[in-house]
Length: 112
Image (cartoon, rainbow, N blue to C red; front, side, top):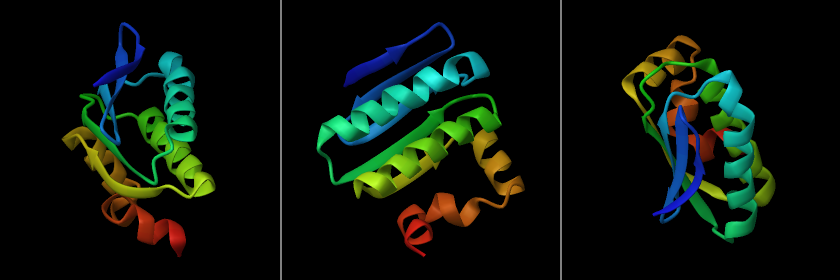
């Protein structure tokens, strides 16, 4: 495990090829969180990555925005997305926004 970002409300760590977010992603932390993930994706040399938001307790469109930024970076860097796992509150929000298919099959959705 490598800690990439630690703030009072949120942290980001790498476990293997997985970016794992913990805490509550709010507007004040989103830009730094997104940037830390993008920096790692660009520098890591991985050809596949996964995103784990299961430790995010609050549903927030800001968290979904961070995820989208990482997905765009993966697309630009030719990094396949192995999986995206969301907490129950984030999954409900993603479902309301009709993002279920994108979350369940990110590589297929991005290549279409």
